[in-house]
Structures are given as C-alpha cells and as structure tokens.
Image 1 (cartoon, rainbow, N blue to C red):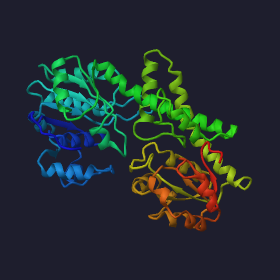
Image 2: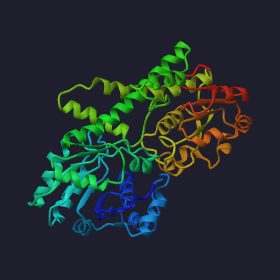
Image 3: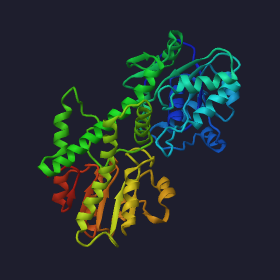
Image 4: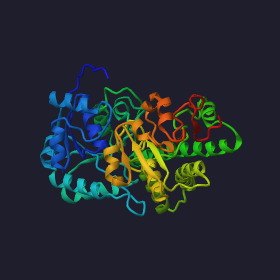
Length: 443
C-alpha cells in the first residue's frame, strides 16, 4: 500500500496475543505508521519474532515484520504491564477456542482482562478483536477490569475479517471497518487509527459489532454449504456446478464469492464460530435451524468424497490400496490445518485400510504433528503419486494447476483423479488420459 504523508502523531498500541489475528493486526498497524508492542507469554516465540522469524505462513507478513522492526515501529515483548503503561489503546487478540460442548472457551480473554485491570494506572481504551459471544465486552471483560481498576476506561468491539492466505491485503484493503462503542470520542480515536485506509467505516453499538462478526461468518459458511448442495444435485441432474455458480454470481444480489463447491469449509473460524453461534442462539432461546443445516451439509460433504473414493474401488474395497493426497491445509496459501477437511478424510481413509501418501507446499510439518507415522509425507508432488491407485486433491493450491500432469498420469498405477476442490480443467485432464471425478461436474 503506498505510504501517505502522515499529519497525525502515531498512536501507541498494545496487542495482546501474537496468534494469527494479533500478529497480522499488529504488523499492519505498524506499517500504517503507529508504534505497536505485541505481547505474548511465550518467550521463545517472542524472541524469534524479534529476529523477524514468523511462526505462521502468510504471504507478505515476514517481510513486513522485518521492515517495521528495522524502522522501530514494531516491538515484541512478554511484559504486558510495561506495555500497558506506555500505550493508549490495548487490543485483545487472544484465541477463543471451542469447548467440547461447542461453547466459546473464554479463558484467555478473561486472563487478558484481568492483567489489563491489574496494570492500569490511568484510563485506557480496551479493544477486542478476538471473536467473542455477544455481550462479552459489557458483561465479562468490563466487569473483570473493574474489579482491579476503579477508574474510567472505554471498551470497543473491532471485529476482524481476515482471510488466511490474504490477511495482509484484507487488513490494508478491507471491505469495511466495524467499530462498536457507545462513545463518539472513542470512535473518533479508533477511526484515527485507520485514517489511511480507504473503505466504509461503520460505527455502531458494542453488541451490534459483536453480532456482525458472527453473522458474517455464518452467512459465508451458509453460502458454501448451499453451493455444495447444488453440486450434489448437479451430479444427479447432469448439470455442471461451475457453470451454475458462474450464472448465479452475475446476479448482484448474490455475487460470485464463496460459490465454490468442494469438500467443505474448515479452518480456525467457520467451524468454531458456527458452533458457538448456534450455542449463543440456543442460550437466548432461539432454534437457529438454518445454521444447524449449514453445519450438517458441511459434514456430509466430507462423507460424500469418501463415498466417491469407495466407488472407484468397488467391489474390491479400500484395504491395501494407496492414495496420493495433494493438500493438507484447510485452504490454499496457508499452513493452517485446523479443522482441515483433508486431515479428517485422511483419518477415515486410514481406518478403512488405505495407505496414504501426502504432499502440501506449506502445511506438511503441521500435519505431521497430528498424523505422524500414519501417513507418508513427501516434498515432491511427483514422488507422492508414484505407484498410487488414485489421486485426491483436497486443498486448492494454485500451483497444482501447473504441474506436469502427463508425468503424474504415468506415475499413478491407475490414472484417476478425484478433484475435491474443482481445481483442474476436466476436459484437459480427460484428454491427457485421466479418469476425472469432480464435485458437481458432469463433463
């Protein structure tokens, strides 16, 4: 993003948590000219970040970290007390994982609020980017801080809308910025933080801002589940879901985004947030029927791919067959394997007696921690395919499109592709000599 002449004095910010949201937000705020201190309890992680070593794969992020450290706008520390004293605005960007019952586990949020309250010596603005249930800021965070600090402070909901794989661009070029506060003065301060970003800026009350985050993720997940249902119908009706989605997407009321059929959504946000949203609705006495169906469709989509694999080997079964799997991350351009459909499918195939060989450009090391010796990992897509009975594409890495597919055909025992992301051109694959099976494609 081109740097503009900054007339306002840079604002000092503390970011609590150097996970995905905290690290990307902190680095981007620094790149906008603000002074940012990123805090984490993990001292080893902090030391690596000080050296410019980034623990996650996100295009462009490592370069920005090194640049802003060098320009003395970005700092990493484990001393939260010192950072709070130095800064005016404190962002809570800690993880909010799912508990076993689907509810949000707010333990890290509670710890952050407690430490903020204990270290405050003057009024501060406390901003939450962590995705939390509606009412958390007012009914939990504010109350915890007030136990330790009896003075004034402001609480703000400023939800993030970052997509892994394009998070830096999403932060600096967002569709909108949402600020939830009951203070016009506080809203003005937060707007100053984002003054160099040109996009609609929505100021609303706290509860509406909290709801906007959940509602957005729920709608996007519903859109994906919807097109997956259409894909399943296309397979029965003889239609091509790619053409159907294209035709739908030109309608301005619908739009083309998230109309991509496949093996379902995963990652750190959709699965967790939809379970939590359903729980939140239930606690408020509302049966969110559509949300329940969205989750059910997503779970079914993984089973559908396994059914297709079984059909390839019918009537001989899966035992002792070898499958190559391209993609372990939950989506392309990331090394994140949280709630990855690929990982879940691999586990089920392994239980059926299949031998699994896997390749991913970035996520293999993370996947090894979960799958271990159950899977053979390779550094080359071609070595992965050697002597396999079938190839499954489970993650939409763009580079898969440009592989030498004739070479892959000759490496496979049977030239069969199940394209779980509709990444490849079916006509081209069939001309090469593959048996091509996509999702909702009748070509």
